[in-house]
View 1 (cartoon, rainbow, N blue to C red):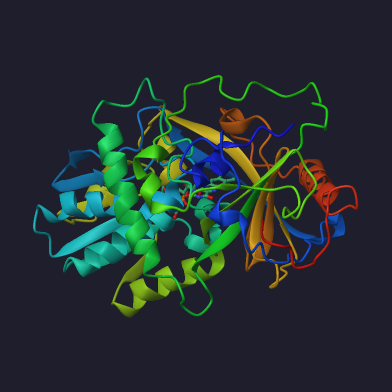
View 2: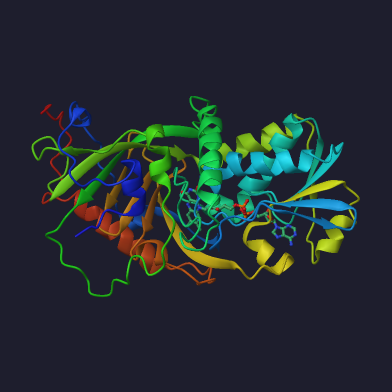
Length: 390
Ligand SMILES: Cc1cc2nc3c(=O)[nH]c(=O)nc-3n(C[C@H](O)[C@H](O)[C@H](O)COP(=O)(O)OP(=O)(O)OC[C@H]3O[C@@H](n4cnc5c(N)ncnc54)[C@H](O)[C@@H]3O)c2cc1C
């Protein structure tokens, strides 16, 4: 009964309906099975997506003598859109021709803003309560999901879809620059969407789309490979339907390290700060500041348009030979080098909506891994053998 989730659909650039075996179904590689055992979970992390119904905040305001450019509220798309959104913010900040720029926040939006401001010629200091490894950014899944919980279709301004497309295309190009580097900060991996109509629904499934979340991925369908349905005799899993595509993923630990190092190597400074009010940012005395405080903007900027969307990931001990992601029933898997991410996505975009509880739920993590284990049981798994072409 999997309902292919949004991320899985995204891979196909839209709907998978009507897909037939195609060029992507040939030459299916032998897969190494994931060792889906609950005792192999070595990390569980919870994070809040900073969701804004209107989309991320990118406007400008003056606080004292400082021009503050906002760059927060990227929902479930912050890693994906980072470079594109930060390019927009830096363009606005540099319009004041500042010699020095303050960046508030050291998550993925803060670091990409800081690096781009350096490249634009500014001397940059990051002020933040936490550095990237301690931020919410470090607890993300790590997949190219540029329109995950990015806005509500009926609330976003009419010009937002075009801005989103500009940000997504810019970001996609910048992520490409990190392919093939030591540590594989960014890489392409195969992705299997496995639907199993033979599994009954639990009955406790909340509605998938109670709100009208914006879906813009068709605007950039040319960027990513299409999904292809595998014929039953070539599919690695026995299921109602198996689709294969490829997805760009972010190995968060390495990517984060590289971003921090790039910033420091270019002469960037980092200062610890815990701002209680915007006036403290003006007191830094910079002509321009870029506000990348993520969910923290809810308190600092008293922005109650930010809704928390709780999400949890579990990581299984890495298996370097596992180079494919999965969507199966309510489970989503990303084969990161720093741990195979297993996530329960039951409920789709509404899962965790309005929930600011960052307490770890061990039962949820165990449940997701146990469901994943079904795929590697004899009932579903066709074995690690070279599969024939169709
Ligand atoms: C479970 C989950 C999975 C996700 N998966 C993906 C994914 O696969 N792909 C994707 O693209 N996105 C994903 N996201 C979304 C992504 O993680 C966020 O959009 C992104 O991390 C937001 O980054 P940020 O830099 O704005 O905020 P943060 O990472 O929260 O950083 C905010 C920074 O501001 C600082 N700060 C805040 N308030 C203050 C203050 N008052 N004073 C000083 N400093 C302050 C913090 O210390 C921190 O340095 C996921 C999110 C969740 C919850």
